[in-house]
Amino acid sequence: MAIYHPKLDLLMSYAAGSSGESWGLAIATHMALCPDCRSIVSLAEEMGGSLLEDVAPEPMNSSSWEQLASQLGSPEAVQIASPETATPSAQPTFPEPLRRYVGNDAKDIPWKRLSGVGYQHLIPTRDLGQARLLKILAGRTIPQHGHRGRELTLVLSGFFSDHLGEFTRGDLEDTDEDLIHQPATSAHADCICLAVTDSPLRFTSLIPRLVQPFFRI
Image (cartoon, rainbow, N blue to C red):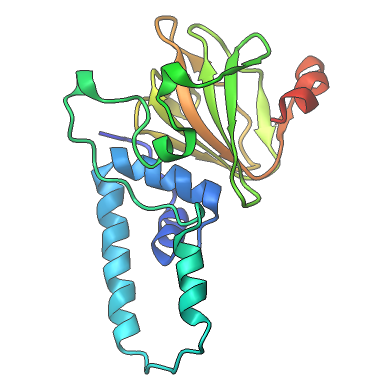
């Protein structure tokens, strides 16, 4: 059961269909692991549907159906995943809808080296959010950094900790430019996360800043 959840504005944006593709992917993947957030979004969608019933209908123009069909066929229309039902030993690391984006589970991802702390895999999306998978090796500490915008970090396996707490599978850390932290992984297991940012990180030391452009982080 997840302890750390997205802030309410993200859940409401998702329910309203106004999340960007990257942010929607993070929220939908979290909801596949979190029944509490599934319930909140379901309730918000029901409330939104009730409000729409009170709105007087207007005639549609001839191109409306084509526009709707185009949107439904787009990868940007991230759908909420069904909750996990397999036994823990049989569960894949990546729940839906994340598997629809990366096409494989963790062992099959073409990871790229991320300095000395681990690996990453960029996930193509069509909004301004930058989505990536991170595999931070066991016993590593990420260089201290802040944020120029918002960052979501969803744990898919293992755990990491910082001064806000310990984050395990299903937990989502929702941070902004007010936070400076230095996450660390367990000494016993790698930590795999889905991370979404809208701006580059702001490292506090020189060497990470020098290599930052090469890793697009």
